[in-house]
Amino acid sequence: MKTTKLPSYRQTALIIFAGCVGLILAALYMQEVLGMHPCPLCITQRIFIIGVGLISLIAAIHNPAALGRKVYGCLATLSGVIGAGVSARHVWLQNLPEDQVPACGPDLAYMFDAFPLLDALKLLFAGDGNCADVVASFLGLSIPGWTFVAFVGLIAISVWQGLRKA
Image 1 (cartoon, rainbow, N blue to C red):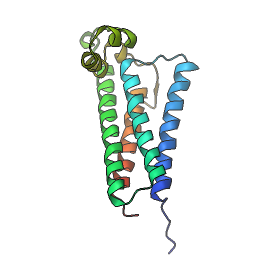
Image 2 (cartoon, one colour):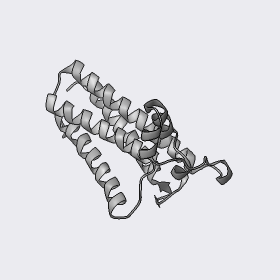
Image 3 (cartoon, helix red, strand yellow):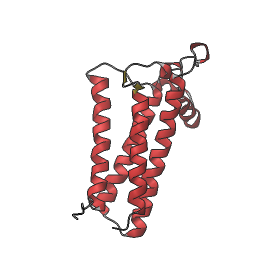
Image 4 (cartoon, rainbow, N blue to C red):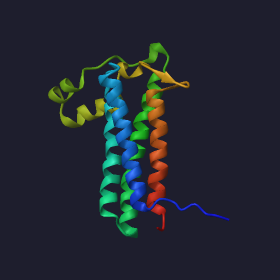
């Protein structure tokens, strides 16, 4: 029986990085070409996708031994879990009844100019009425829903990267 050889640690880290680049390019395409402007939660999700991607790129360049693999795996997993939490909150906001949707808040530039950093970050992570709009969906999931699915995949691969032997 023939066995399939799995990609190396470095190759898998580069695959994760490429996947994150693809996700960000898709987001930029939707923003710049399709005119879908991101809400605060969309931007926050992008930050955590970039986080997973950069951690994976650094891991690929470093190609660490066992302890380093665990550290990079934990860091990428942490970034993915936080991003998945933001995505889940976004999906939750989109599924609220109309009378329970929070009021629309200020834009990001104003938040960071007018509020102390911690307050602006709290507002950014909480989302507002703008985040409740479903701009597009595919196969019954909104863009934040698909981003959540992507985060689950990134988390699974990052955990595997941290636990794998070779």
